[in-house]
Image (cartoon, rainbow, N blue to C red; front, side, top):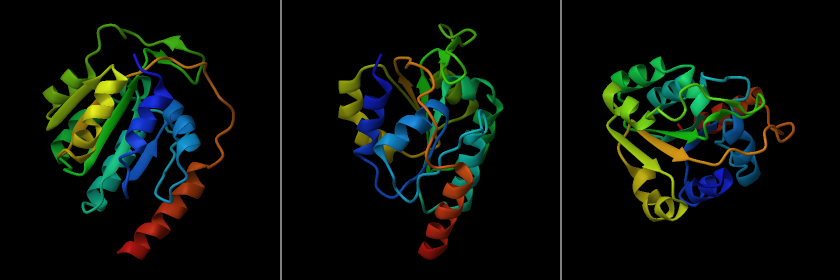
Length: 188
């Protein structure tokens, strides 16, 4: 298992102009690492960020879209895997924090956490690529390949559970959505 923030640092090193939608725990950690104008935090959208990311990927096929999802969030909306695979956006990379708990609501254990294979679910749903990382060095070595791969791709990041809620997120989703929309309108 990797520290979650270190896994995000490895990804952030390869970020260029992607729209990034972190949700739940990843949202709080990503906001400490990035203040990019195309960050779209999705608090209050547990299990729906993958659907929002799909909409953005389809609306803006020229722009790469990263969703940084949680295992609990994805488990609550497994149907999004099938929908994403069916629409087949080549520009979507779906990162999943796999820590085995619903972290922000009090670290309740995720049902079946030891048995869930998110990469297997994504591949069987029809995702073009799926990767699993539980070693930070391996993630660093392959991060450039992963962020550039043809999507839809799912990247399962086996991370250590944190200590639960870390305080209020500075940027609200509605504010960020207006900002991202303005940036995308300027870029055509």
